[in-house]
Length: 315
Image (cartoon, rainbow, N blue to C red; front, side, top):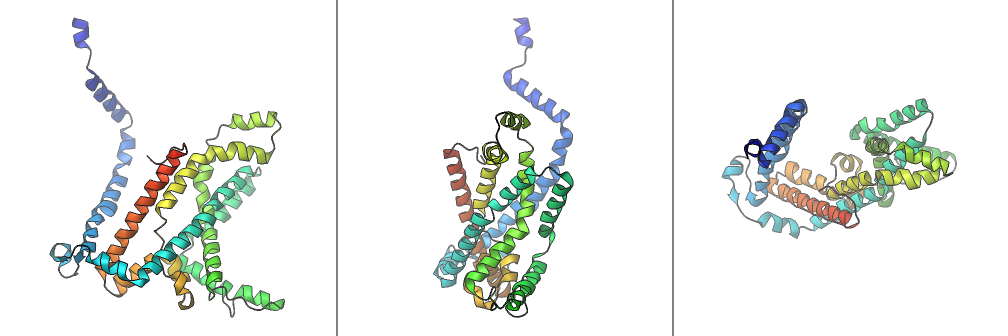
């Protein structure tokens, strides 16, 4: 009885084990302090501003002093014909990006993984990463220099061989193709980093066993490499679905022009024009809140579907 009374209870043992973990790895816990502070200050505190979507907001009265009007801003937003245009354009452009841009880094990572000459592999990675560090303002200038109908490099070369100039930037479907191609060029190389990291975790013995069985490179890639990074692909796909209603401001703003605004006007540019240029802060905030809620729905649906198919998902 005396020996049993000296044994710690289960909750005490758990607390003791957690305290040991903290003392052992306290440096790692300290490293989390700054990221946690960053997310609290710049991600959670600004959520207070979402209240503007339910107010007749005035910059002179602030959030606390502005009049509450309920869902009137959302009713006004949904009654605008432009609202459905920008939502359609955002969904279409993001869906096309998902179809064409999402597989690009996966394919690039698989190709880089198969390279055996290390100096060439490092050189290729460096060249592929560089576009990510170029500002969209510069990329927009390059696009106009390359694809302008008059004076563009591509059309000048076409004219030299007797082919008439193609309106890449002024015809709507051509503009969409240029928009998608530029996005793939800018982001595909940088996106390979996550997949290359996932590839390092595949057991090398699987490849050795496949060599013994006489499997070629394509079969090893299809039956070992791709299944090995499938959980990473699923997680990245779910996160991409969460951004199906979120689109960057710089890319459509820089590449758009008045002739293609029916396709180029998206939520981010609408919020910029309504919120900053027209000072309709409540309307712009309502649009942003609607955008965030739709993104959340897509994340939950994507995660649920992934779990139904036996994948791990985000939670």
